[in-house]
Image (tube, rainbow, N blue to C red; front, side, top):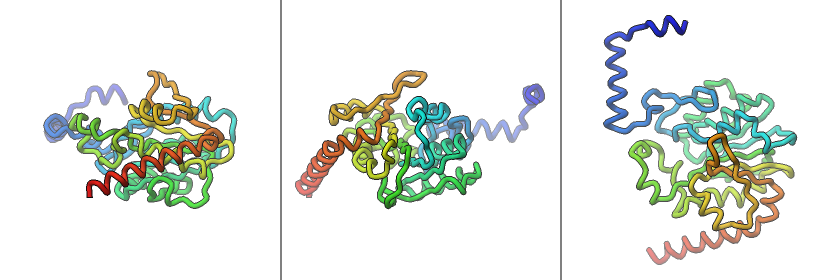
Length: 267
């Protein structure tokens, strides 16, 4: 079959269609995944369009490695993906681990609609539940052994300087306040309620790593080393989150008060 495909020739209308895609990629700066309607993530083909970010998180490598050595030998039954977007992380986890029950949350109904298509594409409806939620808000007392999140973490200044391709992606999935830490801090604050006693939290914060370290230097975050080096992704044990919950809550309150004061002055 590969040899046959190598000898194949495109028809004129097929050549014209490819040229049209190339022209749009160059002139409009539309991401390639949006042009062809799909992307590869953790060895899977997923549907991709402007309803959610293009799947590209380094967390794919963790999924392919079974989250080892971070999970160790702890038993895992329930897993949560916060800010799932088009469902790439949740779907990949459910495909790789048929013994896991996966929940996935996102605020955007458009992103969740795309995620639902990816869930159906891989036949995961019985093991992957999608919920519209502002981070953990829609959950009651659900508890998970593993919580994974790739939340927005780009600052407004960084967003303004990004290449044109990113203008085609939903800004809701990219920006998170002046230092990129707004969403991450809320996750750190609220995750303990939903983590099992020996649970693990893994979060991607990208370039916001430096700001997060300055804000919470006492928090024992373990920055994960990938095959290409560090990628701004940390792991933290549930017990450590609970031990430092007071510091995280105080920081979140102080930030909320500053925002409220600024809004009053602006009004």
